[in-house]
Image 1 (cartoon, rainbow, N blue to C red):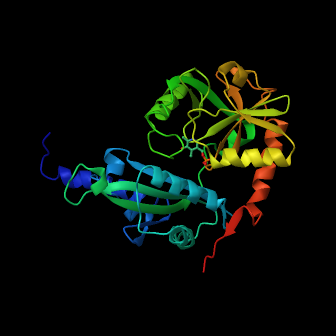
Image 2: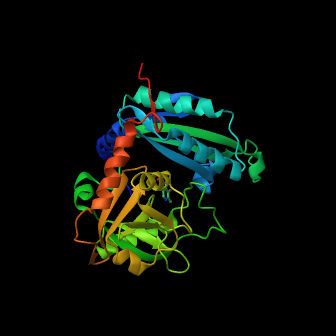
Length: 319
Ligand SMILES: *Cc1c(COP(=O)(O)O)cnc(C)c1O
C-alpha cells in the first residue's frame, strides 16, 4: 500500500487516539522488575516464555471494601504452582503479600482484582534450557471484575455445554493455575455460537469439567455436587464447601454428567472474579423455575458476609 504525501499524518491522530484510550484503562498499579508502575506501563518482553510458551503460573485474589479475601489460600496455591513448575523467585511470601498490598494501596481501589504471576522469563544467553531461565514476577491491582455483570447476577446466566474436552491432567496439572486456555476459549466461542453467555467444557468421559475461569455446582434436593476431575480446585469452590458445612448442606466432589446438570434444581458457578453466580439456563433447558434458587441465594449472602470476617479477610492500609 502506498500513501500520498500527507496521508500518514492524517492516519496518525486516529492511532494516537486509540493509544490514549488504552492508557487510562484499566486504572491500576503493577509491580514488575522490582518497581511499581502505572498499569499501562507494565509490559512484558515478547521473548518471555510466559508469553511464547504459556510457561507461567498465576493466582488472582480479590479485594472487597478494602480487605483481601482469603489471601493466604491464594498465596499458598501460587507457591505450590511455582514449586511444581520448578520456578523460583527472589521474594519471600511476606514480601509478595506486601507487594500485593502496595499495588492495591497505590491504586486506591477499595474493590480490586489482584493478580500475581510468575513467568519462566528467559535465558540471558538465549539458551533453550528452562533451567537457565531467570523467572519473572509480576503483580497488579485493577478494578474488581466479574464473570457475570449485574443484570446476569440478578437473573442467572445462560450457559452452554461445549463438546470441547478439558486438557488432560496427564498433560497439564490442573492444580497449577495456568494460561493453557485454548480449550476454554474454544468452549466460549461454541457457547456464543449457540447463543449462550458462557461455557462449560467436559472431561474425556463427557462429564462436566469447568468453564473459563470458574467451577460449577449443582443443587438437587438440597444436596450439592461439583466436578472433581480435570478441574482447577478453585478457592471459591473450597469456600463453598466451608459455607455448606456452616449451613448444614451436604456437598460432594464427584462426576457430574450433562443430564444431572440440566435437571438440577439449581446450578451456580464459582470464581474469585464474581464469587457465587447463579445459572438459570443450560443449553435450552431452564433450571428449576428459571430464577435464582434459594440455596444459591443463601450461599451467596453468607459468602459476601464473610468478607468482613477477620478470619477470612485481611485489612489493607491505604496510607
Ligand atoms: C481460577 C480458575 C477457577 C476458579 O478458581 P478460584 O480460585 O475460585 O478463583 C476455575 N477454573 C480455572 C480454569 C481457573 O483458572
